[in-house]
Image (cartoon, rainbow over all chains, first blue to last red; front, side, top):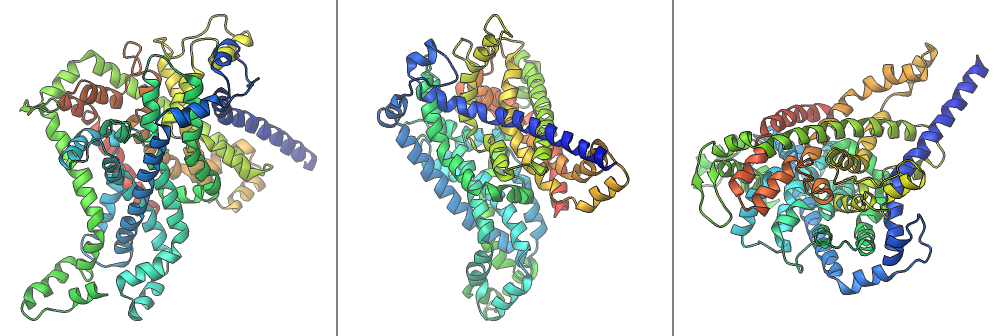
Length: 280
Length: 312
């Protein structure tokens, strides 16, 4: 019986590792291919295809960095993502505090509509939002993106923060209020520090979502000086000649900010997701 | 501090009104709504208003920069009669259903493997979830290159070198293949989200359940179907419903990989909507396309909202 079970366990182990190997190849090979292509000369890419860069060159990186708008795109993406993230954390914290700690009529209704709008997809809103952006005089500027990205980051941040704020014992906040902290002081000095890990997760997600956004950026922005990295890259491919080496070099560098943040914080990602459920 | 003081203390001149306000909105009403005002502004100004103006747009024949004329349900009717729109409905259904099912199955396999006591588990988890971290647009670009129809394309190169094909396959321009090629790329990036959700769910299942099942002599497969799967039901439903909304509404893969072609074989409703509204500048008709799917979307959102609130 015991021997039989041990044999079963070792078979199970072998299957597990075999499946894991396949999964790793599936997940990593496309990424590897992107990096390899970015390191090949144009001649090597088409004339001697192979899985390894036999004579690696950094030409594509140099050209991308210094002879295209790449750095402008990156700067715009960074500005938009950072602004959106900061604004959503402040707005989301205020709202989550009100919903979890204050007594007011319409509380359930507000909480419900926040989840509801979190699920309304951008594909439904981009045409009328285009008109809104025009009316506000923000067409073709990064500001249009800073504003409209709030439509998906704020409901999401609020929803996630509500979950975390609930876990902070009510007595702590009440004691602060009795001590004369006032609601703003309580939120700023008591709740926010306690919810710092949660805010980090929320910031990570908002930043990533904003960095990766494409549809609004493509519709609302047209000038090279205002484009974010995703639209900038899409613009490169719309010509007839695809410069794959350069495109892949730009892709590698354009993914870096999102991938590095993921590498640092992925330990918290699973827990964070379990609370809210974030964009896939 | 100042704010709450003002709200709680009756002003001398207008006692009845000030007493009434906190009463109507609840004890902390004014303060709460002050805190909520930015969120409500976004909800109303940037989501609710655009949503209703999309419906209003769909009832008009409106071009960019020109005043619209009211046409009633004309846009809806002309879409229903339109060959391309009908094709788009079928494509969207295949794309979404097949994509969601494949992601769920693959995601479950990843979660099961990661949940085992494997070596370097945290590293393996990080690597398996890596596709999720890449910007969707860049993933789409990368796959367009992998699918390249010459010997330079990775997929053609591998299959040709190993003798599995004798002619290079046109993954993205073959009418019968294109939609499935796009789905494979989308599944590659979307699977980690499922794996994360399932893994989080698995880690919440009490160990005793498995021990009890083992004592009862349940095999690994029985344990999966009798313990793991039932415990994950709610997580699975929430994940698949969330993903259904996002998958159906995401345009990057189709836009970059095929642009809706060949011969409209891969158009899904967000790309069709974009093409009509932005490329052809027919805002009214373009806004109508996603609204055709509104009934399904509303049902999914209502079910999800209920389940996500229950989760708490």
